[in-house]
Amino acid sequence: MTKPAHQDGADPGRRSLLRTACTGLAALGTATASPAAAPPPAASGGPWDKTFPRSAEVDHRKIGFRNRYGITLAADLYQPKHAAGRLAAIAVGGPFGAVKEQASGLYAQTLAARGFVTLAFDASYTGESGGEPRHVASPDINIEDFSAAVDALGLQPRVDRGRIGILGLCGWGGMALAAAAVDPRIRAVAASTMYDMTRVMSKGYDDSVTPQQRAQALAQLGQQRWKDAESGAPAYQPPYNDLKGGEAQFLVDYHDYYRTPRGHHPRAVNSGNAWTVTTPLAFMNLPLLARIQEIAPRPVLFVHGEKAHSRYFSETAYAAAAAPKELLIVPDASHVDLYDRLDKIPFDRLAAFFGEHLA
Image (cartoon, rainbow, N blue to C red; front, side):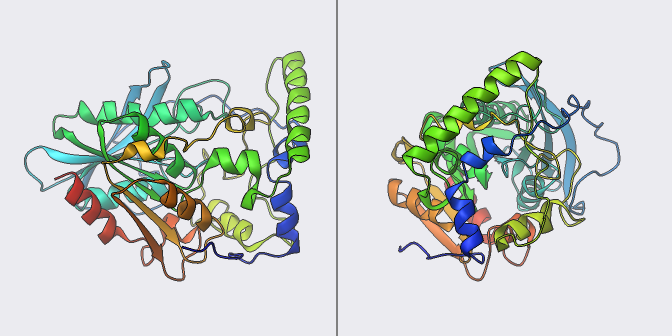
């Protein structure tokens, strides 16, 4: 497929953003207040705390589990009420900077209503999951979070261990692909509205960052490490998804999801909180999808919006992956449309994909 020219309202202002996408993470890093420590996970019988309505067809409860780094992850387990026997299961993560009460929970609950046991989890250092300092990310730890979610699903009495798949949204689409490449227990993987976070942090949008800009970003990040070491705590970027006027359409779309009642959740990094200034370091040092071909012969499904600014991530990942693979382009959909627009998200195709390959 040919790469779309410029989606989601590209303009000269956005071109400037593209050129500074990775350097801006360091340059914007005036210290803000440190996020609070992870709250204790809410009890399963507590009030519904999601950004989507509760389904009467699905049983829900909170669970916790540890990854191999010893971090306790918080998750929502969804199970279909009327299915019998051991079932296929799907772990759902993302978007990058979101929490399980947002898009991943919507996907998980909807697929549970289709007959799967599903698990939506908070990444290490975010949401209700453990890890200090708060709001830091690392590709290695986040890939491990997916495999730990597979561990947790495999311990559930209603789950068939031989029939577990994973689904990653936005930046967690890339994490899901990397996890599937290294974890053969994952029998099928889907990525919806995917970002490759190592690519965008090291090269900027549309790979527009020059070697000189990358060197400048690394120099800034190195200086930030000295400041963090001197203060004894990390500095944080400015609040995410604030609008000041003149932003590209895809940034307006992010605001309309994360900063309005549509999708706002106070624990989400993207809902007015922020990552640490030095979060990009690990992402800038490796290609997340270097071994994507090793997922085969297990199947991969890519889902992306026709009008998404991020569409090229799925298209190039699809080209690099080995068969069996499928790229589904959703007509007239933007990146954020696939977070929660029930008329856009192809749940029928996702359920059929997992139903076939986790049979």
